[in-house]
Length: 220
Image (cartoon, rainbow, N blue to C red):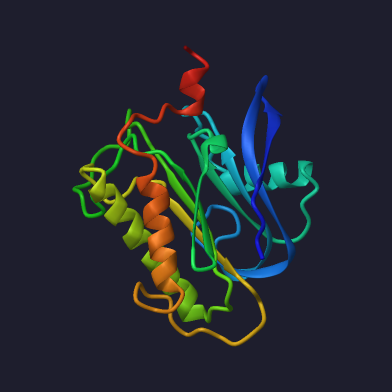
């Protein structure tokens, strides 16, 4: 099982910046759209790291790798970035599926919105990390990402916001590497259904209030 994350900090640019660390007791199967450790494979840990809203590094995977090394994390893992204070992680459980979400919805956009210049945009991020207690096949893992994304979009609609997500959202789904293989991860499948409900509940829990980015609070 994937245990609850540890909230810690890293020293960077003169600030103690928060990050969440999940350490798996054994290697797990994973699918992810994260900048570090994306794709399908075996992963041993997950990082979700707060960064300032001015973040402009062009090597986010290398940056996350540096954080992992400082924490003594070995082997392959997943690394995510967000402007949200990751200490405000939202957790929901449904039928053995556990979801952790850091939710920043400062700039929700429709997925098929017309292209616009990125200069000056305020970027929000919804990062979702999910544990499913059954081994999912490759297709089921991919389907689980789609299911989590659909549930996130449903929650955003439920909050009355004009979008389906933000430009930088990421999803990571982890499961055991052994056991009978579940072939499906859609929203009406055995494990996709509780995944969808847990993601929906976690994102909806952020409410309609403004989430102030971590770096903006430093100026208050």
